[in-house]
Length: 308
Image (tube, rainbow, N blue to C red):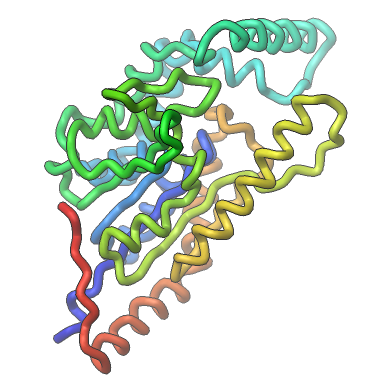
C-alpha cells in the first residue's frame, strides 16, 4: 500500500537553552508511537536531534541534562558564568553590581575575540551528549544545519563527523568562535535557517513536524544601542521563522517565555513545556498522518529521495 511509504520529518529549531523543550517533544512522540523517519536540527535542535538520532532515548537525555547541569564541570564553566551574567537582575545591591561587572567584562572580551565563551567547554559539552560517530552511522537519518560566514550560504551536513556538524550548527555568533573547515567559517544555523522545515522537506519528508523555541519579539523599552540591535535581530528572526514554518504540516510551539538562550537552569521546566505543547497538537499530528494516508491511497506517489 502506498501510504506505508510516507516519511515523517521532524524539524527542531534553534534557541539555545530553550531548545531543551525538544526533549519533551520527543518524549511525547515516542510515547504516542508516532514514527519519525528523519530529523533535521538547527543549533540546540541539532544537539538534541543528533543525540536522539544516535540512539539516546528522551528519558536518557533528560537524565543526562540534569546530571550535566549539576556537575562540577558545568558549574565551573564559562557557560555557567555567562548564564549568571545574563540572569535577570534580582537580589541586593551587591549582586546587581556583580552582574554589571560580569556584563562589562564580557563586553570587553567581545571587542578582542571572535567568541566570548571557551571553545574547550563547548567541545566538552558536545562530546558529552553526542557519540563519536559519523552522520551516516546514526540510527535515524539526521541532518544538521549551519551557516558559512564566508559565503553566506546555508550548509546542510549529511555526512562526516556528527560531533563536528553539531558543534558547527550550535556555534552561537559572538558566544563561540566559528569553526574553520577548509575555506569555510561555520557558525550557528539559526542565522539563516532558524527552524529547518524546508531542509526536512528537501531531504524527502512527506510530512513535516516543526518545533519553534525562539522568544519572538520582546516588549522591552529600547533604551540603548544594544537594545535596538537585539530588536532588529528579533524582527529578522521572526521573518525567517514565518518563512520556514510555512513549509510545516504541524507546528509545535512550547511556551519558552522570555528565557535567555543561556538560561539552562530552567531545563526541567522547558522539557515539561515541550511535552505539554506536543500533547496539545497530537490531534493535528494524527490528522496530518491520516491525511497523508488518504492522499497516498488516491494519487500516484511523488518520488522523494532520502540523501543518506
